[in-house]
Amino acid sequence: MGSSLTPAARIAIAIGAAGATALAYGSLVERTRFTLRRADVPVLPPGAEPTTVLHLSDLHMAPWQRDKQDWVRGLADLKPDLIVDTGDNLGHERGLEGIRRAFEPFRGVPGVFVNGSNDYFGPVPKNPFTYFMGPSKHVVKARTLDIAALHAFFADLGWHDLDNTAASLDIRGTHFEFFGVDDPHKGYDRLDLITAAIDDLRAEDPLGDETWPDEASATPRRPTVTVGVAHAPYQRVLNSFLNHGAQLVFAGHTHGGQVCVPGFGALVTNCDIPRSQVKGLSVWRHGLRSAFLNVSAGLGTSIYAPVRFACPPEATLLTLVPTE
Image 1: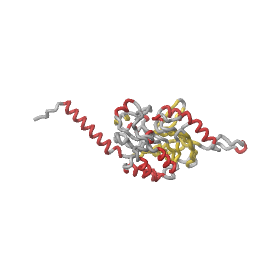
Image 2: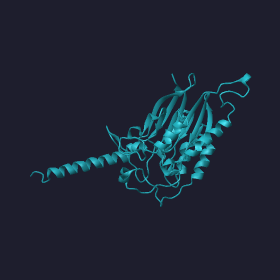
Image 3: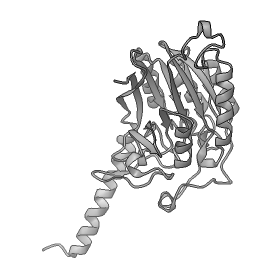
Image 4: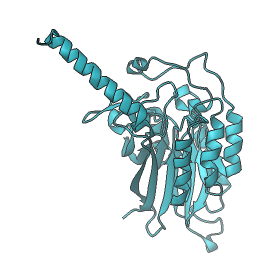
């Protein structure tokens, strides 16, 4: 006897089977298919030595995620010159245990970091379809996390906190100025403080002026690269960074869309950045200014939404090279 199913029922069953297969792949395979993305960025002064930057973001770490911890530990073999961490490191009340294990091999490597919302608040179950209605909102019942302990660990590693402030580092003969903001997704960014932070930073740098006060021993300002760092790449933040002279900007938060459609890309960005720039290296333009922008797709997901599709978890190794 032939099948009693109608054509519509057969289509519904096929769609359901395809959806179940995609969900299984996204949760069991792609979510742990950790990937290292590499790119060259021509941003250094002519003649400068190339500098490698390891960009880490959105680990959403839980203590039992040993595979992710081991993979991140292995990145120390790359021997980066600098680490940039763009937040959302924690994904559980005991997430710091996993972060300590993952980041310990980077002790002694210069680094900078900013906060993401999930460094303040633990994850909670959410309806994923709400992301189609705009950026996610703060959940009152979210449990607060021990961000002070996270900062203490990063300080012990020797990393600089860039939340609404600035810092500088000399790496391979190039002077780097960094400024950053606390999480823009929660409205913790204080862009009004950046100008004063940069002014204070340069006031403490005897080589920051164009020349020494004594014209007889005038020394030109040393080669400098200006870098902006934020967790969430909201346009107001990116535009402000460019107005403050950023040549290179790092961000995370978007998870690259987390669930993407092959040939179309991200369905959502969880902020107001264009979908075409939801992950990877691109150029951000504002007025007559432009800067390289690297948005990390991140290494984790919420423990309540452990799925990725057409968007594997990633870290990025950028090699900064001289401009032509």
